[in-house]
Amino acid sequence: MPIKINNISLSLDEDTGELKAKAAKKLRLAVDKISSMKILKESVDARKKDSIKFNYSLEVEVDGEEQLVNRLRDKDVLLYEADKKEEIVFGSKKLLSRPVVVGMGPAGMFAALELARNGYRPLVIERGEAVEQRDESVKTFWEEGILNPESNVQFGEGGAGTFSDGKLTTRIKDFRCDQVLTEFVRAGAPEEIAYSGKPHIGTDVLKVVVKSIRKEIESLGGTVLFSHRLEDVKIENGRIKSIIVNGEELACQALLLAIGHSSRDTYEMLFRKGILLEQKPFAIGVRIEHSQQLINESQYGKFAGHPRLKAADYRLTHNCGDSGRGVYSFCMCPGGQVVAAASEEGLLVTNGMSDYSRDKDNANSAIVVSVGSSDFSGSSPLAGMEFQRRYEKLAYAAGGGGYLAPVQLAEDFLNDRVSEKLGNISPTYTPGYRFADMRECLPSYIVESLKDGLVNFNKKIRNFSDKNSILTGIETRTSAPLRILRNQNFQSSNVGGLFPSGEGAGFAGGIISSAVDGIKSAEWIMREFSA
Image (cartoon, rainbow, N blue to C red; front, top):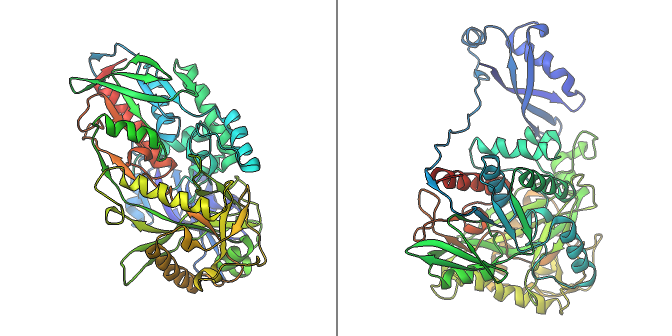
């Protein structure tokens, strides 16, 4: 059994070639006694700005590992065995039609890959376009303000994460996380994502990766149909019987719904069909932009710009004492840009995006405030979705139409005045922007919470909320506004054969957790049905 060594450090002047010697010293062995070594995790320790280090966890193999660990009695040296994949006991019920996966985001993509690898020949339907054509539709929207409601930043191959920072961090603990990272590397992602403490791919690399995974699914007998939208489901005796796709009825016994957090028309259809849904909290707010240099200096001090240090990020949280609402940074994009992310005409919503290199001048992040049922109008499961729509419509009006975004300097926002000119950085949002008052497109309690949070964040990062910091409205799609209820077997609580999955079903939050949820949903299909 290999040995895991924690807390091996390198200074900025040391390279990874010195890790083996440090591992040997920790084990009190000669270097040549280590037969193999692998980096399990690499992270930057910037707590002391005058002594920034890289911290590593390593897996090493030597002779007599158990005896060595027992002799050393070092809390940083332990026997290590990676979690093993669960064995699936395949169901005996024969599928009379191919399993259908709706959505080609992380959950749907990895569910389809898992099914295809096990001989189930899934049929994947995606309302948006393949990534190549989707890229062109998105560019047309950003450059000309012409929205394709079926293929955009939210819909299309790769899901909403394709036009994002491509962060691969997650708080869940599941062996399938490593499986997802391994698949990404196989599909063309950098090998470092397998061990980086804050792995990311970036939009440019994600476009290559999702296309490669699609081709793998197809090579294993799966079929992926783009520009195909789920319009209806037919239920008989409490189970899925068939689905309507682009006007055509298809027999279906196993339907995996990985629809993403913005498929509002699909949510409405599911509600009409009586499928159990419930309201779910999420968060809304604005995007904030700074110069990346400011963030680098705040996080790295005198080492800002060091060639071994990448663009710095941050994670900020604050609890508003009076209201108890949480204010926090979300989807922070170093060296990136703010993007138009609407999926319905006449509504405006933003997101953040960056390429793998994260080398643009501005950093951006959402600064959002938690909302829940008490903020929504009515008890309908769709109330949170209508809440989003209401404020996205107001944001569109505040920008003056044409998908121009309302923009306000943070200092002006704090003082309730409309900005008249920019500071030393420019908004990256396209198609363009208009100076406006964020009070025109956000509830008063959100505005007050954002102010409270920005004042607090300015104490943590100098000049975070000054006259140069740009707020762009608005951010509403932090997560799904509802949950599609399911049981312990990952099936709908009241409709058999329906497997709600991923972020759109309310059970995940990000690329990795969504992909893992998709894999688990596929496993439950395989437990019930034979190929």
